[in-house]
Structures are given as C-alpha cells and as structure tokens.
Length: 359
Image 1: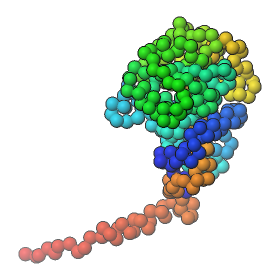
Image 2: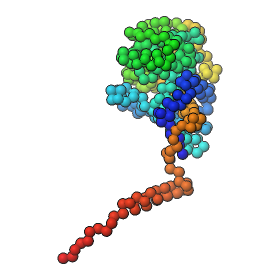
Image 3: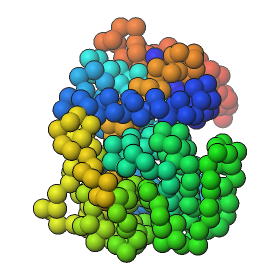
Image 4: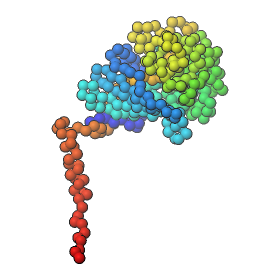
C-alpha cells in the first residue's frame, strides 16, 4: 500500500508542527542531505516547454530512496483561476521499487523553497542582516518572508509588487502571522532595495526582466534570486552576476534555467553543498556581494518527501491506497481481473432475446 497525503494533510502537518518549527525542520533536513551530496544519483530536471509555460519532472535517488516531483510553471494560470505552480511527488523504496508515498507538493514546494532560501542566506548573508527587500509579492512571498524572519531574524521587510493588491494581501497575512515584522510598502524595486541587507526576487513573468540592476547593489548585500527558474526567464541584469560571488544548487541545471543562463560557460560558480561540507568558502568579507541563484533542485523535494512521510506517520495522517497492483500471487497479475470480469459479466448477462415467428 502507498500512503497518500493531500493538501489538507500537509496543512495539518504544518499546523501540528507550527510553521516556524516546520521551516527549521525542512532547512535542517535539506542541509543534512546536501552535506552528503556525493551519495545521490542526480540529473537536471526533464522539462517540456510550451508558449504558456513548462511542465517538469525532477528525479533524484540515494541508495535507499528514489524520489521525483511533477511540477508546472504557467504564469498565465491566475487569470484562469489556477495556481501558477502545481506539484505532486512520490517517494519509493530503492530495494523493491515499491512506492511508499504519493504527496501533494504545491504547498510543500513553497515551504521547501523558503527553507532553502533561508539556509543559503544563513551561510552567505552577513550575520548582522536584519532588513530584506521582497520584490514580487505573489503566492510564495509569505513563505519567503516568514522563513527569513523565523530562521534568520529578519525584522524589517520592504515590499514591492506592480500589483498593489498582491502587496496588500501579503501585508495582511504577515500582519496576522508575524506582527513583529516591520513592513514598508515601496513604489519600485529600486526603492525597496536601498539599505536592504538581503534582496529576494520572486517574480512570476516568463521573460527576460531586469528586476535588479547593477546600480541597486550595495556593499555586503546578499541576493536571493528565486523567480528566474526556466529558460528565457531571468530577473537580474548580467552585470549583477558579474559583480557578485554566485552560488547555485546544481550547476548543470542552473546553467540552463537560472540567472546563470545569461553568463558564459566559463563564468565560475560554487554549488551550495560545497560550502555546507566545508569544501569551498562562503562569504569572504562583510563588503562582498553574494548571490544565491536558486532554481529549485530535486534533492530539496527528496528531503521534503521524507520529512512529510515521517510526520504523517507520527500524526497518523494520510490514506493508504492501492496505487499499484499487488496480486496475492506475484506471478498471477491477470488473476486480479478475473473476479471483477466475472462479476461484471454476470451483471450485464442479457436475458433471452425476442423470438422470431416463422412465416
């Protein structure tokens, strides 16, 4: 049997853990798995692009578990009443191939993305960072804001989005969830960035945009670039990358999908796991500009799915389902059909037809 976790189940896991605690657990789980990076069988995600968006599969495995995520990105979906991003994922046992878990990952992806952003900032941003610009106030913005508040102590956030309604919604939610955060509405991305220790960009448009220009950089700033996550979609001017030390999740994937797609192949970057494991340095000085070019990687979903499975078992949540056929005799797969076909055949068995009268 496979455990099914719905959106409601994931929301109940968050409620039972408390959002700050769950974000910490996610960040810790992702860090622990990144520290053993060489143990994983990794590949860039497989993407199917269309003029409307992208649909992707994201696989990864270690010696014990195999995981994958199905996820889309369709910026025009909100006009249709659908989320821009929708996702689900599976976790399987490597030894048998049996699927252990099928889970919603739309809500969980927002949580793990925020946890990964905070994890990266913890090792790359200045330790005295307390102010963040949040550029793009869409569906993932609350998660980013709360992760940086609870995990890094960010206590002032400057908000900017071209849609005032999005900023109003974000302000309302943050006011209720974390009233200690000081919020300031800004009229532009440039205004929001002035004096910010951290700048998080999380816009949704699938286009080459310049959300952060080089003149917006300040010494010691950390950039958390989250929105540029597919070919042809960027948020930063190339000169911003040239002025910063750039860190990524999985370089082969980021070269295709991240801000890095704008740079030549020889442009040097550091994978985040190298810093976590001590194989490479992080921030070199208080004045250095650092950049986390985040596109999301399957290892983060692997960590999330394992945490969800453990939490669901602790809380007795989810539903066991027959996702795959398991005949009593593994060699008699057809036998699963026999009883059903016989019952259905009996129900449909026609009675005697009309008699034909002879002439």
